[in-house]
Image (tube, rainbow, N blue to C red; front, side, top):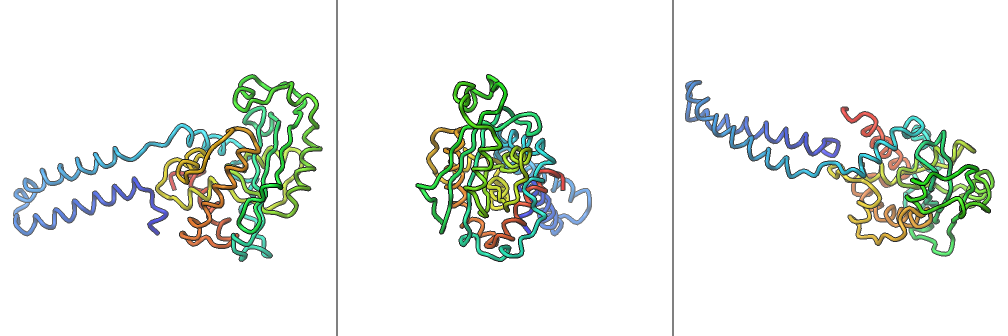
Length: 287
């Protein structure tokens, strides 16, 4: 129950309970109401000051997290590409540690899955709880249009680099052959899947490390890939290269598995439910 209550809400509840307990303690020595109020005024003021100072210590959401939330909410009705309402009866009770995964990342010409295009797909495979180092996927994609300068500065992919690359239809078919029936994993992977769905509907079950992190670390404010890499002390190299980011995401996913076990998400169906819970928190933050 407490895992579903945000840290600021807990602070408010703790302050109210403390004030009530203080009122009960003072009531024993100051029966008349005017004496009670005079005695409680400085006590309540002191309690309010203490909790205000503690409140100020809570880190605000970072620009990175805000960007992640903004991006995810703007993509294909948010998390619909994850199909979190689908239930896979043949694997829902399988332990997370027993499944095979393909961890993916994409780079694009921009953030809009309906108007922009993929320029790179990278992926790594996890089998038996380990990254298969010699079984990776990395392809450039010719988007059939000019790559905006801002996007090129972000991931370093230029028109010249993709000039001789195949189009997305060929690369996506190759990727899906590589993935097979594996569970797809990515960080805010709903965005990647939304781009892929513009070409071919992706039927693989999927999990999102951002959503799993939100479910596992309820009081944490920053669930960006860089923040989780720092939390788990995972080395970061060549950011915004799809293959390198897929490798980083895979390492973070493996580090998340014990945290998922800690909160009771030990099977694939549990992890799906946790992703759905986290997605609901993002889409309806007031609930």
